[in-house]
Image (tube, rainbow, N blue to C red):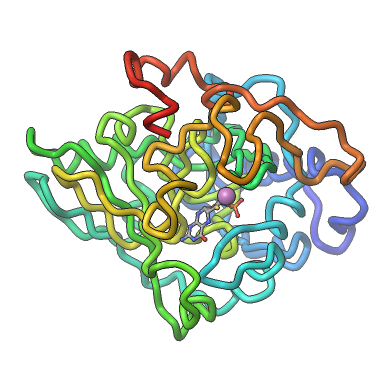
Length: 320
Ligand SMILES: Nc1nc2c(c(=O)[nH]1)N[C@H]1C(S)=C(S)[C@@H](COP(=O)(O)O)O[C@H]1N2
Ligand SMILES: [Mo]
């Protein structure tokens, strides 16, 4: 079925319907190719989102039988401190973010450092859609169909040197576009990091979209990282630089308070945040709101079978 903005409104339909309908649109618009497809007749106003559709092949290897969080919640309940600290600030203010032209520089301990134009980066590898849980350190979670490809595909292109041990991610910090950067909540630019093996793990997704369309600005357009077994703050948004290093990078949250935010920050119900428990979580977008049943948080956010071996022998209470 194909519909236009004339006969549908996001308020009338369930997110699942939107998802399925979009799949149909994507199939028609992209006819099996990967990369970007434009459907100019499909108004962005219909869903309050961009018209830039991504043709992504579903990869269900890492997420089965989980209901995605409604699109509206995913795009209106956000953490993106460059646009303010309230959950509604990013969707209210991120409109000022300019996402074209945009480049991502990959540098440091690599054989072939390079700067990629975002539209080339989109086409570097086939786009996949993976339904991942994202667990925020604050105690809420969501389930999102993310569109992208494994970060390893990009890292392999630049050929990491044997001396590279860590990967640093640096977000844009432009106070002209990002009102939050004028304040000093955290140390800008937003910086995150992973060990090289974590960055190369196939689960780590270089992410360009969600629900089959280019990332809304509030979710980190035009490109972000998604690391599903770690607390959400490890998944840096709107990145402009990726740097391979031999030293553990200083990250924004670890610099803010190293007792509260460790470098690893693997989701772990057994290691509490100094100020609150991490044993349970609340799924955002649940129609029962604050009365929704608490969900038990899983070790590695439920991705242990793919990632636990990377931490064999490590004391995860010490390396939180
Ligand atoms: N640049 C940047 N990236 C960021 C953040 C941020 O404030 N700035 N917040 C992080 C946090 S705490 C979370 S939980 C996720 C939220 O992603 P979402 O808004 O797409 O759900 O983004 C992470 N990436
Ligand atoms: Mo978070």
